[in-house]
Image (cartoon, rainbow, N blue to C red; front, side, top):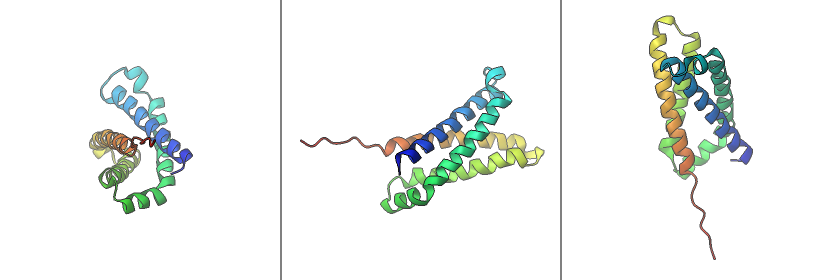
Length: 135
């Protein structure tokens, strides 16, 4: 993947994860709610999620195909796709879904979001191999 795409994906995912974690801490766990649990943080999370989705979409056609062919990191790669799909669905349900299921969807969304962030970091760090120096 080109360096600009790699940077776009990493920055998009980190922005989405950080803003989501900020809102989770403020809104759900009441940690500095007046700062972290605000609508501005939630809006930043929504925008970051859109950018992260766009970034991942920009690498999907070739990155997934190359990863599948190489048979490297299949679990973390396809795990991310599954979690991303679930996050997109639950995120849409939070905005457009019925009020009766909202509390369950909130819990599902943030649990999946935390799992996705961990798998993304593992996937990202596992692809970095130490460079060998040949004398």
